[in-house]
Image (tube, rainbow, N blue to C red):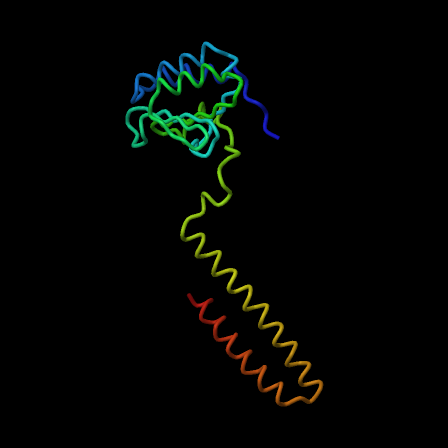
Length: 188
């Protein structure tokens, strides 16, 4: 279980962030300052990545990064209207609020890492690349063919034990085909 991040740590981080980065949208500064001054909201705030998967989240970007300036997500609806999002934050202070900050070298910031939490809403396969999926498919194909090979070898042993030449020849052909498919896949 993760240790909860204190409100004071969140405040300190947001202050540091505002002092070191110029934000793309000035309303973002207002929202972050509002959070600093309202501990009840900050208590329910969580800094995460991939905020678009969260039930209620805000994305804020600093100058110098390619990310959008500002986005607010609520129940699968996205808006770039900071004023609407501010009112939602102000009126729903007890609801969890997920915040993603995009700034230069965010992934190398120890201060950001100290308040960053794992996003519980990111789908399990979200980080899989096409290469990962291809590799997983290949591994599954190899596994299935290996299982077929073992099954056919058992059937050949049984046919030999029973002196059943016809079954032996049929299964031996199937085994040869499976071995060939296996060789083709493993040579890739």
